Length: 171
Image (cartoon, rainbow, N blue to C red):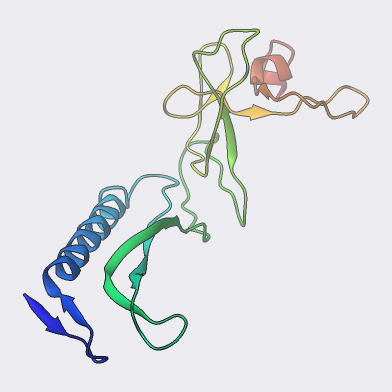
């Protein structure tokens, strides 16, 4: 199907329509992901950004082109503050404002380069060794502080048993 746009340039409506449908489909995936994870602790919704696809045309001046449809340019994650909820767990934490919790790889071997993940989910628990973990078992990381207040530079798993010198009753 060929049409003429407002400048008289001949266009093909089918590829333009197809690009719009493809972009809407990708946006629907983003919206579906938002809905599926709406009740997930710490989940941050995303939104789609779109751009026009324009090819250089035979217009009369610079910047004149032919509209060839639209496409999704990127998916942006919203980092706005979510609502805080009271829980019954004394280990659950919340972040107000910007920032992320840092978690280590639960399967990491000593001596390998560390792998960190970042999350705003503060749903935490303590494993059998006293290490604070997320729901997947990844340890919450923190910088060690010496007895004279010097902050270290290498993140370590936060361990309540070690902090209490072996007796959690000391906390």
